[in-house]
Length: 367
Ligand code: IPM
Ligand code: MG
Image 1 (cartoon, rainbow, N blue to C red):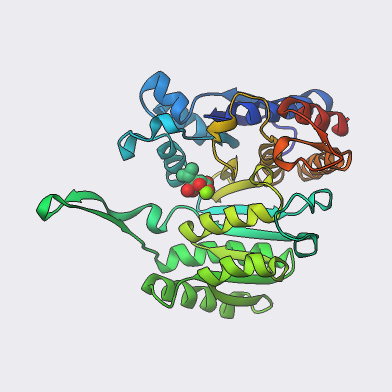
Image 2 (cartoon, rainbow, N blue to C red; image 1 turned 60 degrees about the horizontal axis):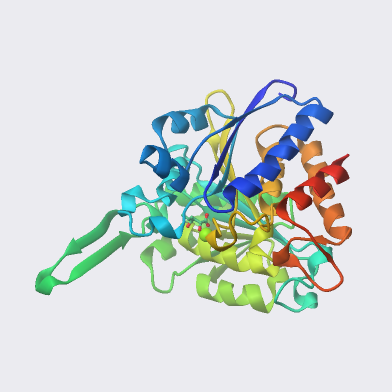
């Protein structure tokens, strides 16, 4: 219920994470102060930052705090200094643990091209203007988590690396349902991606998605597309898509690609949602699609918009403030309208601003 206190856990993490989450925190504070909302903000370490202090990418304490929060907002996990760590100790494992154990199986990644930024994309303006697609990525299954996995020695001093791509009927139908439900609120169109030409799990994916559509979503237009073709079609004619449904790995790749259609990876928010728990609360985690970007970290030049829009998704999907979410989206758009640009989206005639200036400008447009 709105007005009841909601707990938000901020996990800035590594690289540009602290900067972009810092700007988002200013926005949350603004909502508390100016709109009298009651968000209790808590902040802790994740990823490399947690490894440096505690030796693990996420402590049990933080993990349990995440379980009890109404929304978790993560900045980024990872950095080159951790590349040599054993796999299970890498910063990214924290994120994967949260996704898996909070059962956040549905990852929503909207790719919207703001009209003010049509010239920031590497694609021609007519290809991307008005673009509004939603990638629904399965997030707790597939090759990211399948067993067996590992690197084992074999004969001749060689080694063998194994990962397993697995999906069950239940996992496929559960994510397909999310895609159909969301499409029903948009343009009623779902494109489901797999590699059914080479993978049995892809054949199953196609069949289960189709059977759910035939039974329960007759009004939705469903197309199946091979994932490699989808990657190509996203560049050729992205506006043919409404909702793209994909597994964990294909969804990871297609969403990075879709991000560039919008002008910058620095613009794409995401929401990861689970089922409702017994108290009717949906577990959730919000994060920008971009990573830790260590090359630009600490310089106050990163783009905070993806994280701010991720908080806007939290307002809408977890916190019960749909109107406030829309007003935050509007403030971001107004700021772009005014010509303010962080370096990643800078173009001729615009005003180059820092991370914190972008955050401040969004706040003044909220006012
Ligand atoms: C993403 C990222 C993550 C993923 C990494 C950081 C583990 O690329 O959220 O898209 O592969 O899922
Ligand atoms: Mg990715």
